[in-house]
Image (tube, rainbow, N blue to C red):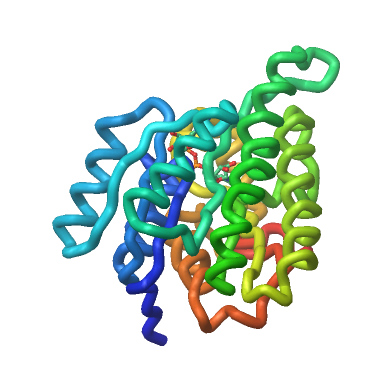
Length: 250
Ligand code: NAP
């Protein structure tokens, strides 16, 4: 199936590395003009833009900390001013601040909720008007299988990721008649900086629970995201797609 996003503008939060990077590259390969948002890794974001341009695509890197409401406002405004619209929002930026609940500090809770959940509320709210005007829009939010199953040591992260699933369903219901779909993608264990820090023991246990028999790669996620962003997925909304090598089969 050929996916053509050549008239579309996409914003990918947290696209300087990992899953967001792969999504930005894949969207651009399908013809979308892409805003590559980053928080701290400007050089890596510039490299993503360079890779897209080298392949004949169009992209620009924009700094914004999605935990800061003023940054979100500027990010949306810059996207619209640069490319004249915003058709596809990929809520990807995310962090972990793991701790057992008994030891969890308020700032670990607050940081994860602000970056992983509140930002998605603000970003999504901000894109609805332009999408309603265009009578077309795609909102794709990267949640996690942890939002479905819970995980010891990740009460903050699981709460944020489960919140995103309920949020996505609500947005899908509110926007279904406007040509706007909202879906969530729940990766399992994908090899990125977020999982690099885990011990070999945790990685081995994860692997033993993945029927497909390997850890996920960013491309496993980006291919599905681009499909959900396309016209071919117009009848899919409010869903959470687990991409986890069969780990949860919820
Ligand atoms: P990663 O490699 O650590 O990359 C995180 C990205 O998010 C980076 O581009 C980072 O930007 C950006 N970011 C973090 N905080 C930000 C903020 N406040 N404002 C703007 N950007 C911010 O992580 P990843 O593994 O690719 O994860 C991407 C998404 O997938 C996250 O939502 C994560 O929860 C989810 N996920 C990952 C896995 C996995 O196994 N890897 C599994 C389930 C879900 P800078 O580099 O510029 O700081």
